[in-house]
Structures are given as C-alpha cells and as structure tokens.
Image 1: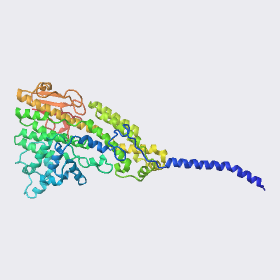
Image 2 (image 1 turned 90 degrees about the vertical axis):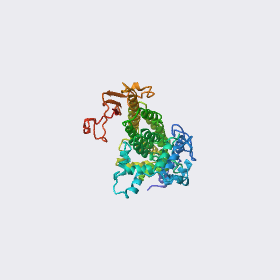
Image 3 (image 1 turned 120 degrees about the vertical axis):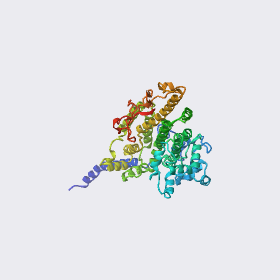
Image 4 (image 1 turned 180 degrees about the vertical axis):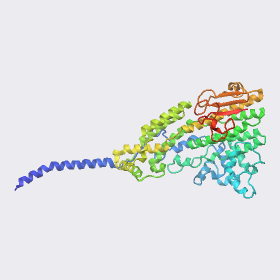
Length: 544
C-alpha cells in the first residue's frame, strides 16, 4: 500500500504538466484573439492603391463618381450644353423616373418648363400605332423598325412612304431643336448620384442611350431630302447626326460602344450621299462640311475612366459585398464578406490599379498591330497571375474552400483576398480587341469617305480621276491619312471604270478591296457571295 509520501510525489510530478497545458491554453487563447478579434478594414489613399487621391467621401474614401462628374461637367452651362436642347426635344422621359428630377435640375430645367415644348418627339413606332389603325393599307410595312432601318441609308420619296413622311412632318419642331443642339459647344448628360456614398455603376445604367435617340430621324429625313434632289440640305442633317454621334461625354465603355454603332449608321447615309449625282458645287460644300466635323473621341480618355470605374467597383464590394456586382451572394460568399479581417482591400486596389494601367497602355497603343500584341500579352499575363481563366467556380470543393476562407480568420486573409480579386476581375476585366477593331473600322470609314468625296470633286473639276491619292493634297484635303490598321498608305486602284480607295482592315492583309459580309447578299460579280473569302475584311469605297 502506498503511503502519503507517494501521493505527494505524484502530485508534485503532475504540476509541470498542468503548467504546460495552461501555457498551451493561454497561447491558444492569444492566437484566437489575434486571429478573430475584429479589426476595422482600412483603405490607404495613394496613387498605388486608389490611383487618384480626391475628391473624397465623408468617410475618407475616394469619390470616383464625383471625379468622373468633375472631368466632364467642367465649363458646362445650360447655354452651351447640347443636352438641354435634346431633352427639350425628346421630353423628360429620356430620364428614368428615379433620377428625372435631379437630372433636369442639373440641366437647369423643370418638367413644368419642358411642357412648353410639347409636343415632344414621337417615335415612329408610336406614330405607327396611332395612325395605321385608320389606314386601309399600310404601305410602309408591318414592322416600323425595319422601315427605318431601310430608309436611313438610301434615298426615298414621300410618295413611296407617306406614313414616314407624315411622321417627319409631325416631328418638325423637335427635329429642329435636335439640329440646333448639334451646334452647341458642349454635350454633357447629367450623371446622378445613386446611393451614399455614390457609385459609378448605378449612375451609368440610367442614361447612356438617351443622347442617340434623335439621330436616326435625322438620317431618315436626310435621305428624304436626298431623294428629292436636295443634297446640301440632306448633308446638313448628316452633319448634325455626325456631331451628335461624336459628342456625348460620360467616358464610359457602353457609351463608346453605342457611339461606334451610331457612327457606322451615319456613315451608311454618307455612302448614299457619295453615290448620288452631285455637282461640283455640292461636292465642295459637302466636303468642307465633312472636314469641319469634330474629331472622334479618343480611346485613351475612355479607358482611363474604365480604371476609375473598376476601382469604384472594388469600393462598392468593400461596402456592400460581392452581391453588389454579381447580383447575389452564395452562402459561402456571405461568410467571406462577413468575416472579420475579411479582405486586404489595399491589395485588391493595388492589383486592380496595376493591371488596369497595363491594359490601358496596351489598348491605347497607337499602332494597331502593337496594340494587338500588347493586349494579348497583357490578357495572358493577368490570367497567369490571377488564374481568371481557370474554371475555379466549377470546383467541387469550392463551397468548403470558401467556408474555410471565411471562418479561418486572419490566417486566411491572403486566400480571401485572392478570391475576391479573381471574382472582380472575372466580372470587370475588359475585352478590348473587338471594341478597338470596330473603333478603327469606323474611323477608317470616315477617312475613306472624306478622300472619296475629294476624289469625286477632283474628277468633277478636272475631268479625270486623280492619278493617286497624293494628288488630292493639299488642294482638296490637307493631308492624306495613313491606313489606321497598318500605318502604311491607304490603297488606291484606278481603272477605266473608276477608282477604289481602301484600308487593309483588321486582318492587315490586302484582299483587293473585298469585304466578306453576310449583310450583303451579292459579291462584286453580282452572284452569291461565295467568291469572296470569309477572311476578307478590307474597308473600301468604289467610285464610278
């Protein structure tokens, strides 16, 4: 039987073990406090993180929305802003009800004042609905959209399309306001703050199509004037359309995309003018008007705004969670965004700022071939760096990973930060090749249209086509522009039948002036378009 001294020895021997476990428990508690103690997220304002350092919101973060507004509203007044007259022509409903009062206030207007301009512009769809019911037969066809698609690019007469002519006559007052708007120096549609602090994403969703609603009726009216033998009056409407298409300045990619599409539509009407019978007086007047058009907005300005937009989206997620961008958070994403020390937001901002800077440099490269190379290199590099090309969201273990990221405390700040960054980049990283291509196509069309008008005037005055494009400068044009895709001279072919002026197009290969397009049923021989290679994409104008 053990005596009392034995029990005392056992108790004395256990004391170091107990102290050991106490230290373990204490260390664990310290770790848990360190790992899970709530610490407020901070944003460092600097060129490396936020890119710009002001203006600031009341909470000390950058107000990117106000930065965009300040860029485009500087010097704008109700007296010099084309948007004021456009709204007077189109009516207050161009603005969604949620932002209407504030938008009108920024323009110096009220709905009561606008009522004096009634009737506002009425769309052909609405006019068609009101009048076709009273007509025994609708000579303009059942679908009003198709009617205007056809009549805004070819000459037509009121006799053939009486309903369209009546629509234009009914809209004469608002159309003249739209033409007057095109003569104003500035063109700024209001950006209205949504939320507190305001954000760019919500504000851009409300209005960017509004500036273009008055352009198509100008094209349709121009083609009516052309069909009735009034080419200079027709081109006056086209000048207004060109100016409005190039004018709006909110600096967003959606606005640029829409502007390119509208500019292409206006160029089609220019083709109709070019192919009509024009006197040398008509040609000289039209050429002068075309050369006086405002320049097409630069790519660089838009993509610098895209950087601000991307950084503002980071801040939107910082405040509201991923659902602010994705539309809905999964339960796992909610755990991530709700966890303490959730994300290193400075790192997200730095990463976004850095890669958008590289993307801007590649996208705005002046030489088109260099742009393609650098853009593809940049896209490949960001994919390698962030894994945005991986099928990450289809990972069977994703929910478990996200829960670990969310519940892992400070130790998992890095993985959480990378996940949020990758999600944002998947949603926001711009695909710019197609946009740059269509931008350059539209710009090349404008260059070639000007040269074609000059060549036609040269023939009208000298009795023969110029021997080459160089013969047009400086008498008819100040200088001959280079091919926007190759930086080489534009191609010029002179034959007994006429001349062809063309760019090599996005494939940068000489296809002899041919362009494969499914929208045109016939090829150069008048047969089905099978003779033209699908890769042929020259941008050409042929004159006879």
